[in-house]
Length: 118
Image (tube, rainbow, N blue to C red; front, side, top):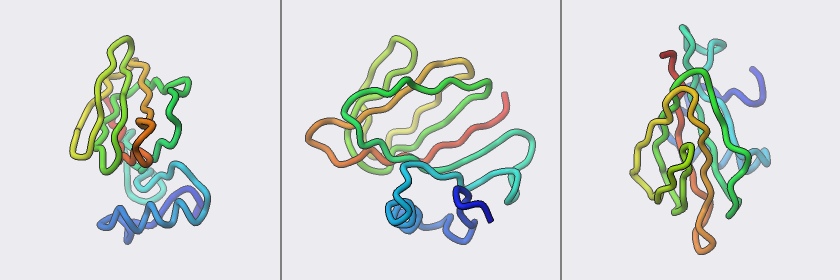
């Protein structure tokens, strides 16, 4: 199994996945790919955002959904910015530039994400 693809057995416990990522010094990992059961252009994983500044942002040909698990911060989708907090679900439509950052007084913003074909 590739190092960046975590086994489906970890799927039910996001804390276990996050602990594995920290141990491996990773900020992002794939948990659902074509290699382990995902077909027709979808992919899922976890990312944690430690920076208090936006990175260059992502933009994809497919839509991407996010569920914030922990942390407080901001998200930018194209030119719109809004607060992120645990329990928030959001969708970046195809072609939307998006980025997430943590607040200075918060731990990392941890998210579960899912890409799906349009």
